Image 1 (tube, rainbow, N blue to C red):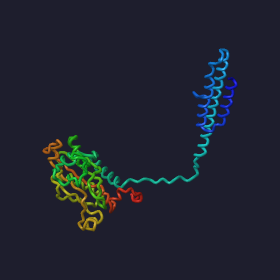
Image 2: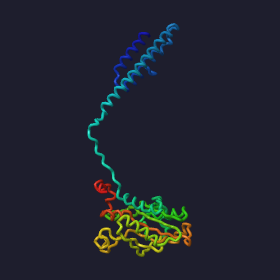
Image 3: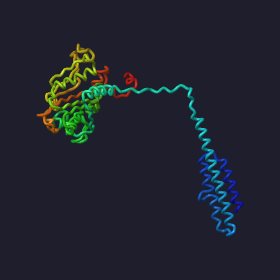
Length: 339
């Protein structure tokens, strides 16, 4: 048995010296010292030895096991060191080579204009409000005084999940949620993405963005509304821009108004863009309907308010002279580099 043990020692040390990978080392460990390895197999026969021989063979077996395990660790450390040196040579960086060009990202034109609008209204004491894009019919229509038979509630115009759930078609539901949860004075700006069933072309998209504002306080009048609209139009289109408010109708507001500004291309002189009128419509506005205030738990005899809504894409197209709304969504880097 001594000779057999020594043979195992010699075979194991020779095999370990020639191992080139960690996988080979693991195979050799299992082969020689594993539960079914050669050394373990020899030791299982010790029961046949005499009482005098067992301690001698046991001591020798332990020495051989220790020698094999020591060689395993030594060889493993050597292989790891060799692999590290190889990786260092392979991954060496030549610091004298020119650096790789990294393309610098740019802010999207929608975000550029939106940030300017936010900054303008925040400077007037407004806060930014957000709401869910998947909305209840109650908040999107009913609470806004939009009757059941209104065309906007038709399934050909609105994305419905069920009679009670839909993709919001406007950001006005945010105003209702804020008025339900907050007592006046209220000054909020509600920008966000909205959805309407529409064909994609140069001026239409089923997904677009709205910016809506709401002020509710004591003594709010149309004069306050006009002042806010004039500030934002001059901020976006220049100090010479004028604002026009003409009567219109929206269920949410009473009285209601159409918001127009002097044409940003011709300055109000008349051109093809503004159909020779000198004015371009940018949104709708008005005084919050007393029914809406009352439905939200706000006393219309004490408080009044104004609200307005504008399409962000329309503002961006006018601001930068873009003639196709699809350019805003295609992520064309050449187009975005213009900004």
